[in-house]
Length: 339
Image (tube, rainbow, N blue to C red; front, side):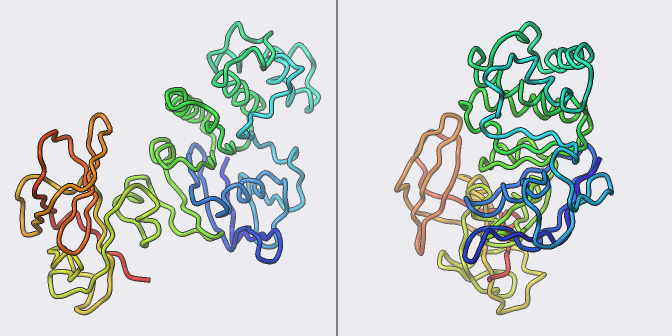
């Protein structure tokens, strides 16, 4: 089952948040993460697809069927919220069986299917427990089992991992992905965690002020951001405004050799390169001498603020010794048109 929205718009009121003209398609089995700053419209998009609010304009299709006027229950979507929304007075198995009860399934059959869903979620033997007797990760798996038990058209996840600690969050990311793949379900995952989005998704959509800026695979989004905002928002980046001068770009930190073939001489651009692209070895034409002004030890790497003439470079290295010079391969520089 696919999810498709076309020119979707919604506003909460004058000067308030919402979304403007968003078009996005998620194919069966595809996992799409939606990221952006707070208030950019991520959760609004999910609520519109779920049917909790009606769009001001645009269309929503599930498996090719228009959803205009259909209430949430009639859309057959699995939804997992940030707080899991489990019924505290119901056991785990009754929580999972609840959507089947709403659909009129007899008790014996719905408990059988709920038990199987709990087993797939790794919770065999936990069916009789109330939510208060489950860990955060176990509650998350109950919520996921409940969202999948009735074989939904698609799966909507609204920051479901934000309440977990880092170790459990990483484990649950993998578990969600495995369940989603096994069921071949189109999935939209709203998150503020960029690492989570890049590690779990087939494609990532970036929103800002209610508008869709770029949809791409995680690698493409990181390596080839569409504009300066995306480059700075997705991961760490060095961004220097400059002007194309032949086969180089004139910037505050000097003339940078890079691929300028798609930009006419004199064009204003932003040179973007990632911290890990900077090397300690002397490689090619882009050489920098300077000094470390901030050194953050992150275990496997150090993240350095490296002051050079005209600015400061953000660099990452596994080297534990002194760093007095850096080089930048020309192919590591991405030129982004200036706004």
